[in-house]
Length: 81
Image 1 (spheres, rainbow, N blue to C red):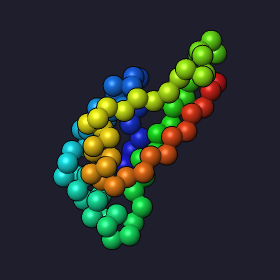
Image 2: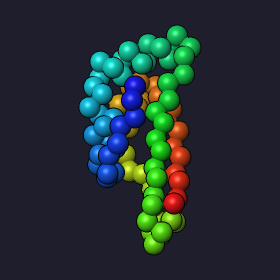
Image 3: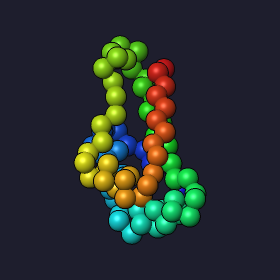
């Protein structure tokens, strides 16, 4: 699947939720068969004046439910420019 680009925390949750419950169920079947499912998130922060200690990623309950339904792990990388 191609990478999705978004500009806000809400965008991330929406991008996850829009994948839909049917896709989550298909992924869960793969997990149940012994496969690993991982959602990779890369956050690039280009603002040199940003407070690096206060930046983070917010996921809504809906996005967390989708990840749990899919049995997915999350891999989060943050890069500061």
